[in-house]
Amino acid sequence: MIARRDITPEQRERAGRMVASRPLPDREEPLPRDFHGSLGEVVMCDYYGGDVRDELDYDLLVGGLKVEVKTKLFTAGHVPSLDWEVSVPATSVHQRTELFGFMGLSDDLREAYVYGFLTRSDFFRLAEFVPGNEKRDGFSTPANTWRVKVRDLETYGGSSTRHRKG
Image 1 (cartoon, helix red, strand yellow):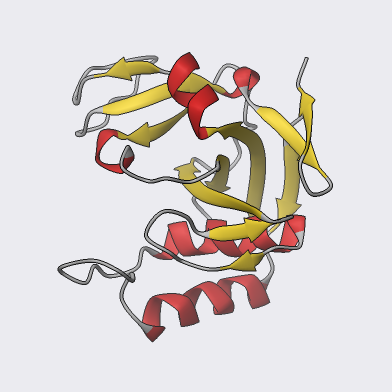
Image 2: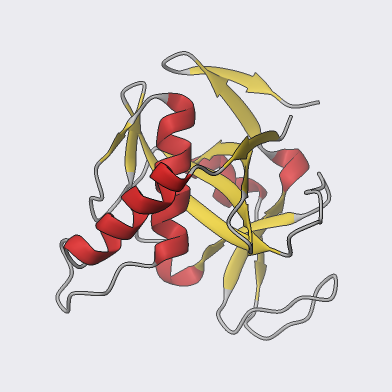
């Protein structure tokens, strides 16, 4: 199940305030916030009723679970597919989150899709390492990444109930 949500003006405003408020925490060199990543955190937080935390190892607390949100943009008008891949950059393997949450935003910032979750251990057990600049399914990223298909993700209900997609 991929959950579609309209992105509201209020969510865009909150993400903008996050970007403008302060750099990402707990970094030797403060990094500027990414608007799209912040918007993904806001939308996922609203969908699951969590709290944005922005810690070094995770972004949200949802039902008592630490969630690192990974957000990707896609071309407006496309409908996400279970065959699409989600990824965690190799530079993020240090994060000690309980769950990776994956979502997509249309590049016109009107629609958001919550793709699903994997525990940190399940993600790295299932993921395939893809070297930077390697073209797959017509796409490449400059950085090394770990990738899984959307179909391999799980949905979560309640505080920690796991539901396998299928």
